[in-house]
Image (cartoon, rainbow, N blue to C red; front, side, top):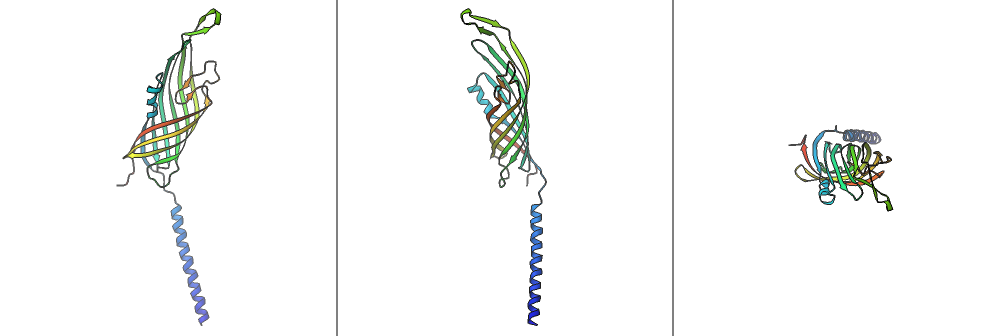
Length: 228
């Protein structure tokens, strides 16, 4: 009789463990269910690094703005665009260039614990449409002095890929500061033409296949789906 009692107790114990395990399984299964992505906010930003050009690069005027769409603070759809103008004079020529650029891409947030800050990676496809002109050209003929040369002008559409690693931190309510280190790879841009561009708006030096850069942004976020 005692033997059957032990067998019955063991059977009840196994059933209890099985039931508990099944409950735990359902709990973890529920945990693994991913919440749908939600629009948490839209950030409007200005590249404040461009303003340093007025001080350190007086031959250049450039402006850049950004809009990103925060999806559950994990993915960010990003649109960036701007305008750039360059004008300078050398001893044997003068150069002018102006154009616009647009970049579209996605950022991925590597942070898991913080509901608003960002530390992550990004990818962009960039496009620029611009024209440039060289005037007042003089060819140095050594002993024969200089000879004037006709003006040269051309227009290009340039494309490039860029990858970035950056941070965005909330310093005040819905006000963010951001920084990103960027590597750009040129696809097309007139690099191989006889009159290659001095600078491609949004990209950088037109003669370089790879270009390193940094952006410094300040953002204002319009929040959505915020908890009361």
